[in-house]
Image (cartoon, rainbow, N blue to C red; front, side):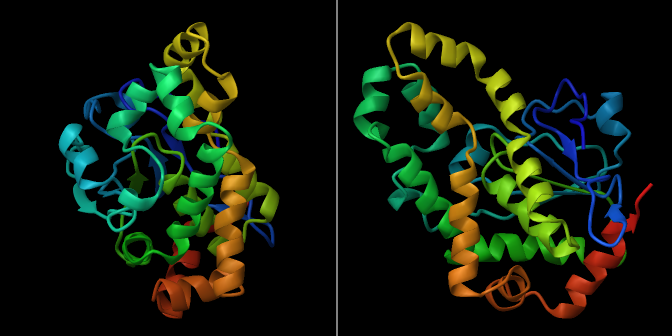
Length: 266
C-alpha cells in the first residue's frame, strides 16, 4: 500500500489493499503503521480523515518520555513496550543515542563496526519473538485488532521500521499474505526512513563514516526479518502456533482478526 502523504507523521502507511490468499486483500482503513507521533497535527486532513481510535505504542519508557505522542482526536493510547526487558543487553544503542552515533563515525565504528550492528539487530529481532515483554506487546496488539467493535488502529515505534515492521509481518502472515508480500511491505519503509535520516547520513559519510554502517543502522535488511522468522520456526513451527502458544492469543481472536481485516480483492 502506498504511504499516506501526511506531513506531521513520518512513515505513515495503511496495510489496507495488500493482497492475501484466495482472492482477498487487507481491508483498508483499519490497521495502520507509522513512526512516532510526537509531531502529529490532529487537524491535518490526511491524519484526521483516518479516524484512528486506538494507538499502540511499542516504544520504551525513555523514548516515550523524550518524545511523547500527540494523539489523533478521540484516540486512546496503549503502551506495549516491546524492549522493556531486552534493550540493556541487546548491543543496540538506545534511540536517544542514535543521532550521537550517526554524527560521530569513530564512535559508531567502535561500537557497531565490523558487522556488529547486523548481529545486534538479528539478536533483537529474535527477541521480538521470544522476549517476555515483546510477547506481551504483540499480544496486546492482536487482542485489540480482534475486538469485534474495534475501530481503526495505528501501531508504531520510533522510526516505524523494526518493532513496527515485525508487528506488520505478524498481522499480514495471520491474514494469509504470502512471503513476497510480507517481505515487500517490510522493506518498503526503507525509502521513507532513508529520506528522514538523509542529512545525518550525508554528514556521517562526509566525515569519513562507512555509508553501509549508517544504512545498516537506520534501515531494515532482509536478514533482520529472516532472524525473527527463523526464531518462529525453531520455537513454534508456524506463525499460527507462535500466535497461539507464544503470544497466548486464542484461535477465536485470530478468527475475528481475519474476518474484520480481510475483504474480496478489488
